[in-house]
Length: 198
Image 1 (cartoon, helix red, strand yellow):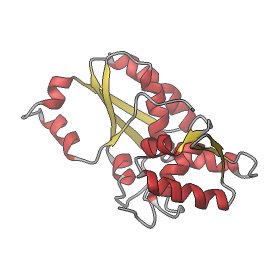
Image 2 (cartoon, helix red, strand yellow; image 1 turned 180 degrees about the horizontal axis):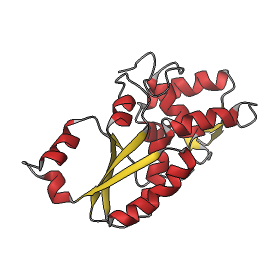
Image 3 (cartoon, one colour; image 1 turned 120 degrees about the vertical axis):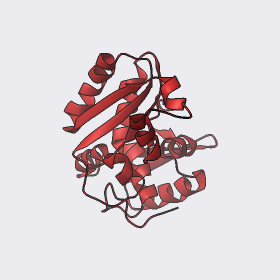
C-alpha cells in the first residue's frame, strides 16, 4: 500500500519512492537492475520500473541498457547529491548499513530493527527516533554484534542498541515476555546477504 508521505522522511513523494532512492543513493552506488532494486527496497518490480522512469526524467537517476536489463545508478552529478545521500542514509539507508555490518558476523540467522525506528519505517507517525534497536537472531556473541554496529553508529551519528536472541527463544510458541513484546511490534527486516552490482 502506497502512502503519500513516508513517516521516516515525509518530504518524499511516497514510501516506495523513498525506499528506491534509499537503495540507490544510500547503498554502494553501484549500478543495479530493476529486479535487484525491487528486492532490496521491498517494492513490486512494476512499481520500481515506473518510479525509476519518473526519477530518471527528473534527473535523479541515470539508466542504461545492458542486453535485456536496465541498469540504474544515482546521478552523482547533481550538486545536492551528497546531501540527498546523507538524508537517505539517516533514514531508509539504515537497514542497508546494518545489513552490511552484520553480514560479516558469524552465527547470525536473521536480524530486525524494532522499536520506534521500525514503527516509522512501516508508516506509523511520530517523532523521529533517537536510537535504533536491533534484534539479532542467532548465537553470535553480543560483543561481536556491538563491534559490528559501532561503525554504523559512527557513520549515522545515532546510537544502535543490539540484542541477541537465540533461535529457540525467538521461535518459541510461548516466548519470554521481552521476546514476545518485540515479536508483537513492527519489525523492519535487515537483509544480511546483498548482491553487489551486476
